[in-house]
Length: 278
Image 1 (cartoon, rainbow, N blue to C red):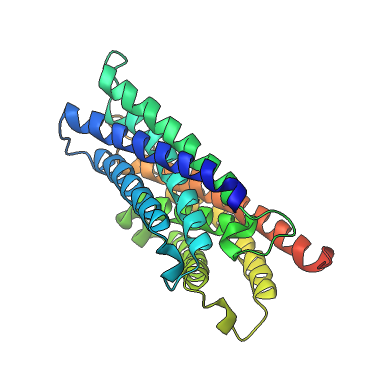
Image 2: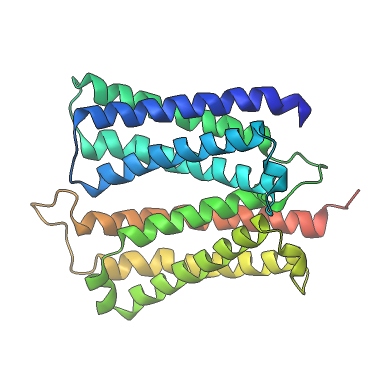
């Protein structure tokens, strides 16, 4: 870690500066009642504050005294922050404003994109390399768990309750999203809290079994959700970010999570059954 400590600190300082600039530029434009605006502002503030807190704790040498797995926590946060800023960098210019000549909004979008790249660099610096002894969340399957949980959150906020309650097929899809999300979130919490050792069964085999089950469930959701969500439900002519668009978001994110679980399953099976521990 000594070889990456200086670059990592520089990257985190850059993240704080870029997210602070994005937040300040958007705040200077004025308040908006849009929930998308609130999401973007929360993303920039949350990432800026937590990154600054991580820097302070590490500079004060207090991170080692916390009862959590610090490497797992910082890596999981960097992955989550990258995903949040990617969403904000897409949502803000495409939904909140559509003014190519608005200098401050364009500058905020650019700095948000740069902050996203900075967090991607941090993930690359902190991720465990093959053969290293590290926490689960610093490995590829651990990072995929963060991605899967984040995508599930996007699905949940895009659901249309009235449409879901009308069709049992859509209710099955929601159950798939919820079960997979709960398990992924549980793994993340147990890892950060250093509680994985209390698991009475082999964790790697449990993860493989769950990933296979999640792939099968998500495969059904990829088919069932569009069939029932868009049956006799064409897009309204006056739809501008209406609930119908949320159905499209859920369909797309379901495919994204299916691909994530497939990659997670392949990687986990390879580690468990085809890689001999050194």
